[in-house]
Length: 419
Ligand SMILES: NC(=O)c1ccc[n+]([C@@H]2O[C@H](COP(=O)([O-])OP(=O)(O)OC[C@H]3O[C@@H](n4cnc5c(N)ncnc54)[C@H](O)[C@@H]3O)[C@@H](O)[C@H]2O)c1
Image 1 (cartoon, rainbow, N blue to C red):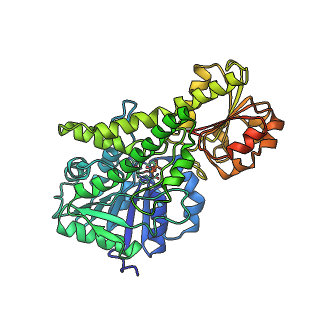
Image 2: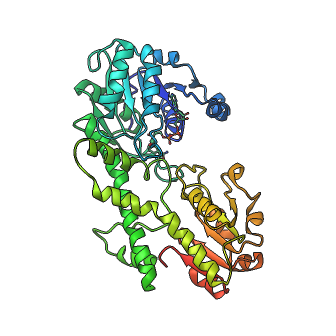
Image 3: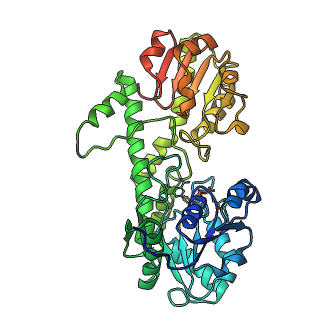
């Protein structure tokens, strides 16, 4: 059961993968929603959906957030080219909003950040720009978003949340807001920093486990052991094992990014996260491992990489979505082109405008090697017979998506990640 809404209007800053679903959920729960984004294209894209929902207004004007009881920040938190936290979007959004911050408002940061950011970065900008005192005149909380785009079971409406507050009142107000959205699946944390740490730990946990699976894949590949079968065997243990699988690289705005926030912040505090850094290093090496498989496969087929046609299937970082941030596909493509002079034809049914080939047939026609980089359902149509007819000699299965034996039986050189 959801609790009553503690205020009438909620403001959402940043209308992307996190902010927009929050707008829809808040509207569904009876809030009026004021969405703000600086990206005109994003606003255009959402225009039709906004028109359909009378409770939601969206635009570029931060002044409209004045009347909101709570304002939620959902702006990006990427890393720089040197893998350092880039808090510019958080700072910019706070600077734009601060002059309109009103007494009594609740401000929540949902963006993923390292411990300390809400209090040490966001809060001072808000105080300075508004002349108000945090904890007394306005309230500050952090509630990391856990949304998993493309997930059909878990969404913003049913994923439990953790909340941290600057003080008791901030925590109570924020917890009441989230209870009005998702009922009692809200866990209050002792501090802002604890809540911030929760999210980084969740994603670092995943990065480390994937790195372990990737390391096993690279090791077992040399021993002729199929890592997928081994992981599936280990997963029959009903306790203390959690299956993670290897792949051609870790992408998205979270897993390959968030650990750096902790690594960097810990360094500032005099601690080196060797384990997290090693996991990042292993996962970042997977595109190269994948390209090496292409080269090996082509060599086994008696072909050179120079001028070989290579189809790279999938640009999104995972199946069923159009998000290609930090996607390993681009690194694979770059390496194949620049280091091996291959002719690369990429195709992603969710990212047609960024694909080199017009469609799957176009990508596949005459491709000597095929790299499956994203396990989109649409690629399941690639049967051994189809590939054979298209001229495929080598299949590098970057997601261990296909039946190895079926392709080998058809005379295609199959190379998976650790199988
Ligand atoms: N995408 C996910 O699966 C996911 C899941 C959980 C948490 N997160 C975290 O949530 C945050 C947002 O991620 P996202 O995937 O929604 O990003 P996104 O890029 O999809 O959306 C962010 C939006 O913020 C807007 N924006 C940037 N600067 C702004 C500013 N100064 N003022 C107003 N709007 C601004 C951008 O134009 C963009 O539309 C990140 O911290 C991310 O780590 C993301």
